[in-house]
Length: 109
Length: 118
Image (cartoon, rainbow over all chains, first blue to last red; front, side, top):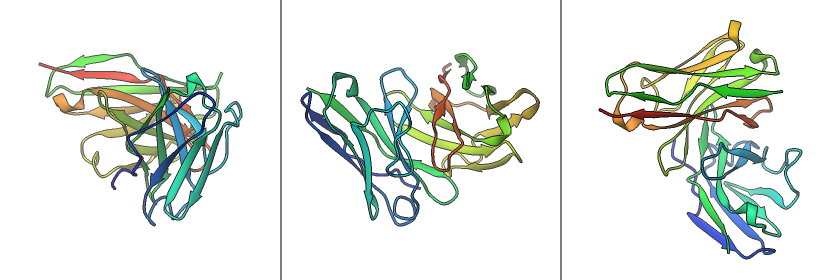
């Protein structure tokens, strides 16, 4: 089980949008509608931002959205704010277990 | 309040054993899967394994099979992660998480820092 592939970094100015990709295979991302995304600030536990590919938990701003095409899922953060500066990880069900992405550091310039 | 509360930081020597805990409260322990995640210093998140407290079915990620043991005690709504012989490379933050909705880990513990050093 290899980690899902994410770009190491992404950045944008306040108010701009940033999109993070998460590439897996037909055995994980492409096989199930179970991609989720997590935000992690330094020294803190991960926080669920998107689940089941596109759904947003209550309390998560609608600036965060998820999508998926084939074996690649994406997280888009629109209208970047200072508090969005964090690490982001995708996660997918892989048949009997789960696999995380390699992580993306989002910097708000 | 629905929460997962993990045991405190631990310092051990290589070769020692260790068992850390994750206590669930505010919901029925047997209604949600529990997972354990490792985060080595400065690195990303890694799944170690998941467990269904309803029947104690446990699935380990290939990298962790045989390296750790995941268990639970339903009488105290607590999940455990255990090592029989720690290595320096086990130094990491360990998180437990809960899944009620399939594919979704919506509740996390605060993490337990394990330091293994001679």
